[in-house]
Amino acid sequence: MNLSVSEENYIKSIYKLEEGQDAVTTNALAYELDTKPASVTDMAKKLKEKKLIAYEKYQGINLTPEGKKAALQIVRRHRLWECFLVDKLGFSWEEVHELAEELEHVRSEKLTNRLSEFLGNPVIDPHGDPIPDAQGKLGKPRTQTSLHKSQAKRLEVMAVSDKSTALLEFLNAKGIHLGTQLDVIERYSFDNSIEIKIRNQPAFTISEQVSKNIMVKPI
Amino acid sequence: MNLSVSEENYIKSIYKLEEGQDAVTTNALAYELDTKPASVTDMAKKLKEKKLIAYEKYQGINLTPEGKKAALQIVRRHRLWECFLVDKLGFSWEEVHELAEELEHVRSEKLTNRLSEFLGNPVIDPHGDPIPDAQGKLGKPRTQTSLHKSQAKRLEVMAVSDKSTALLEFLNAKGIHLGTQLDVIERYSFDNSIEIKIRNQPAFTISEQVSKNIMVKPI
DNA sequence: ATTATTATTTAGATTTACCTAAATTTTATT
DNA sequence: AATAAAATTTAGGTAAATCTAAATAATAAT
Image (tube, rainbow over all chains, first blue to last red; front, side, top):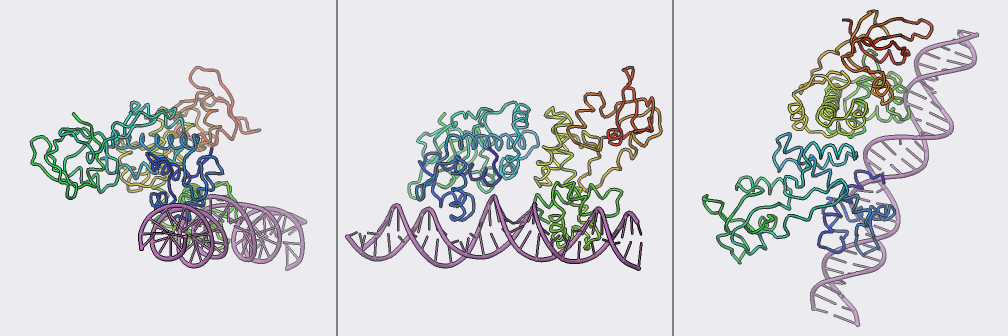
């Protein structure tokens, strides 16, 4: 199957939005891809034609098994390039997403597999997300619990779900990285903000938007 | 200046064809880009509008200084990625041109410069071509003489001007690489073929098409 | 159960980068 | 210098991926 860059971006976004949800809506996909709902409808017809998605008018979108396979290949390339940029070229985690968005569209299995090998076949990317293997098999997410939902008092940062520069720079400023261990001091039900503490540094408070995007596991 | 992938390919090809020639013809550019003369004319108007080329109807095409600067950036990226693929991922020289054609379009100065640094700021690519530096300054070609034109009897392979898989695989089969030293045994004026010998291996004959694409220096 | 709101689709344009076929200009040849 | 050949451009069209505005369907609210 030969996909255009645009088609690949749709497939990738559908894959992303499908998690949890049963079907991806036209509007959600338009928002995710920064385009208009009418454009999504157009593309949905094309991808259905190519048997990569299941789509019926007004019924939302789902990847077919074949579509999912394609998505996992793209995700694999994206995450491997992120590793390369961080591990080999010394970029920091907030810089790599945009670059990987471009590099991921170079479709060469040989390149992808050699890159993986060169990087030591990494299993997670710089944001803590698992990297599909050459067969498209994906290790389960390292954790399903966000700091927002977790009830534990002591926990470790396992992944970050939002890859925006804004969030990642905020986390840098606060000293929050993958592997950071933190204590929950207090939860404020008024705005769902959380007061946390890292080692013996002074405690500080983070908003619900932030804590929703920090994936943790209890320790 | 923000260029599309297609515009970048035109700029790069014009740069390539401009060497020696004073102006690049519509037909030559169409052939190089595997497209039609009419399409070249369309694009020429657009690139003139963007002040990247000098172009007057029926008069051929030349890069402006700005166009040349753009071309050198693209060439830099292309050749650095080729080095990466060969030096770090273990590809051989006939495999990397096509992949680099895609990777070269990821436009990020930071990425390019870090890649260069990671590779040890190489000055020639796997085919012997010089790599422009971050300012776009290009070391002069390592040699202007092809095996075809050279009069010397003993010489060393410095670069290969044709990057087709076909030629490079042929050279692999014959044991001709960058740095290979060879003796010219005989030149046959009938078809301009050349009999050569590498060290103490048996001599063999190469055609004019091949010898034209092997750049050499006397030793 | 209507009605209002929101979501989605259709219809019709636009832009980019192509194309073919015909017209024009340049260059080469008699 | 006239004519033939080759190169180039113009005119008009196509496909991909967008868009806006209008129409339609689904969902929510009265």
